[in-house]
Image (cartoon, rainbow, N blue to C red):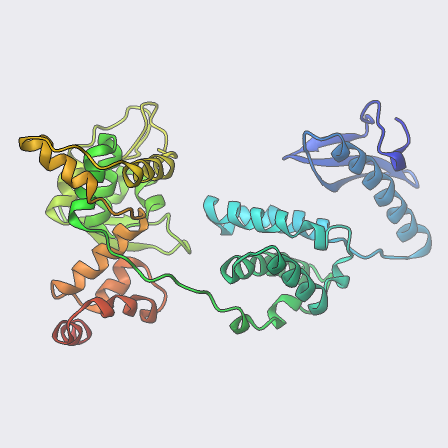
Length: 369
């Protein structure tokens, strides 16, 4: 098996196996067989195997101490992460889970190898200072703290710690700087829709008409659509909150021209019926190309008009289409409270950022419903 403390392994022991991407160990103590997670993720690097062997010996020793001496060893941060991960699939969307894992991976150098009770307010503050020194924004630091807090909450539920120290960090001292919303112009939108592949262009057009997020659109399936009532019921949402989104005639027209797949119920699908997971990259690449395009030489007729449009293109994000929907909805007399429900905002305070784009009369109408 090799020396575990040197990290050199010739072959994995037969009593170490893999389950759900995590190393597990099988061993006997006092005639009883144990199967325990080693709390080490399977990775291409050989050091993961070395960690698994070391963890097996440590856990075996812990079990022996518990049985022979009644000693309960402290839980490590890695054990808390694995325990959290086993529960997270049921409560978080795939995108949110991925975001949490990114944050936890970035925080490993401050937390790995520490007993869970050693991770206190002071250590978390040191982590945040270290992350801030790398030039990270407050928004990123808040996301990191949220991910760490989720793990500590599971540790608290398991009885490994009494309090969650992440909840004692004052997040008001880490305000998020929000860039002002710049609504895309009609000319810029027209250029993007012309340059994008037809299905991606339809997704953009659908976003303008519904205010739905990109992830919500690409995961939309036909079971969620009621064209008769003009409603799309969204359940794969940020925060996993069910909501109904009205379909305008233009939105319904976009849906009606989508061919159905024999492989799945996804509305905006790939040729194999699967989710179009490359919309962001396609949209971003097109926006970058158009924003860097050199000035066109004078041309004639429609070609001249197209060249002028490209020259006046102002880059925008896909999410700006959601903002555009919200502003237009209120400008057309919609209620701020109805818009809150359509957008899926937890608080109307979030929705009220769009009031800045209205005249005083329009603001009054939107508030009066």
